[in-house]
Length: 323
Image 1: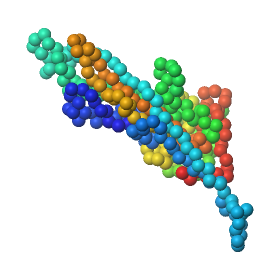
Image 2: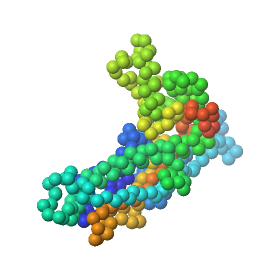
Image 3: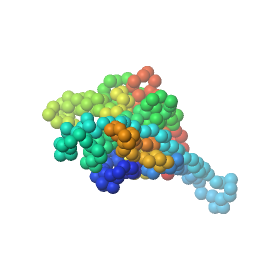
Image 4: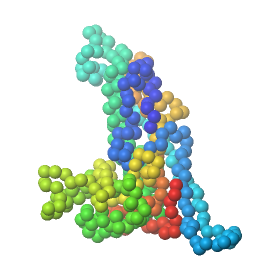
């Protein structure tokens, strides 16, 4: 997401002090698990190229009938959806906390001081990032009050190409092993292959390792967040009982994508009076966001929340992802 374009009387001063981006207040981004595309006006296309098998016996004078291999080129779309923040407040309520700006007469905050704007906007952006983190994972598009766009887990559950794993054990070690064994060698051999799980499930995994005699960390320490040498990312907004293995990074080789932007068809971020004659101020922030997964077959899903492990399909064995 681009830095906010603040439309207030103190725009320059406030903008220089607010250096955080609302979209980075979530764990997917902060832990380097998702590639973020910014400044998307309408749509962003993720190109995908697949090649079937090419090798064959040598032919001295090859002809068209000897041609082997097929190029399959398609794309997946990031289409950020609109949502907003709008909240009103009375600066008089906060006057006692900013003593150096308290007036001696009856006038209170006749202008909203830039330092106060920074503090309040910082709190707003932090809260937006926290809420957005949940939507980037479990969000769903729809007509509901808090249905804005589909999160990455929602995308994964709906993708028929996702590889599914099953495990009847409640052991987190057994569940991670089930995901690992079901994942294709080319995917799990990638340097950025990562297991995604809830923080509560990782705590269970950590306890299991600690209980292993002569192998786990002592009870005063936390075990390394890895399995089979691959990183485990414990996420607060991830549901318990679900483990996903896929390629995660902030670069374009990531299998997880997000598109965020400030809406550009209006003043994106405003701090101003509700009406000239009143004391109420408002903060308004217009945003857009969406998520996507590049390759369903590069995701292994274990969903122990229900008897069904989720959508099936492991992709084709004779195709290689090359782009």
